[in-house]
Length: 224
Figure 1 (cartoon, one colour):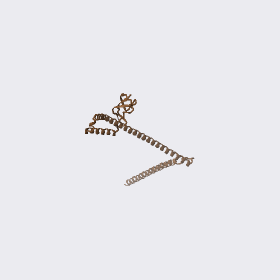
Figure 2 (spheres, rainbow, N blue to C red):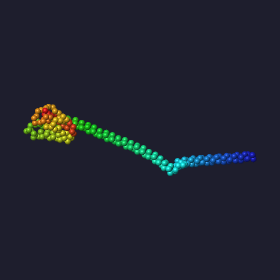
Figure 3 (cartoon, helix red, strand yellow):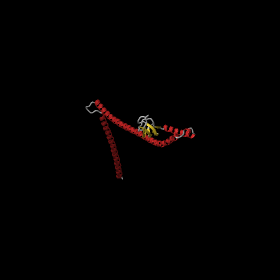
Figure 4 (cartoon, rainbow, N blue to C red):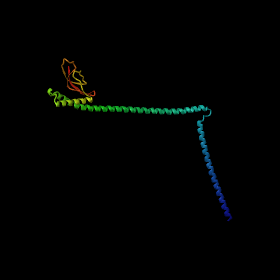
């Protein structure tokens, strides 16, 4: 019985010794890690300090000026690159705005040209109606000039001519003017001692312009 108690006491003492040894090893390991971290931090601080400290044998003030100049040069280089990029973008925007303005002007001109082409087409169809009004009114006898029907037709004709003039349609001057191939279409030559050669003597069909563009040339006879 005494031997068993001794064995139990030995085992308990051995366990306590093992626990103390493990705790000691854990403490030593923690201390070692802390020491390594402290050494690493110290090395980093030394490296950072070494970068900010002038090399041995060099004037700290001169070294600091060189370092500041180098830093300023880098900043200036970045600023120049940024300015160059900004100038490039501004130039690109200006070009795009110019292209858009040219496109808008070209589109406006094309739209105006299409409108004028359509208007001239309509005017060309109206002019024969004007011709018929003029022929009809020219054949009315003098004694019937005051009739209500004749006066009504005359007012309609004048109203049509007024509306055409409002949109830019004007008759071409012909009789007594010098012949102009851009405005007149000569269909015959006549002898006339009172007019000079090349002068329009008679208008056979009235011509018209629309906004300074000829819609129909005047059909005329010219003094030879």
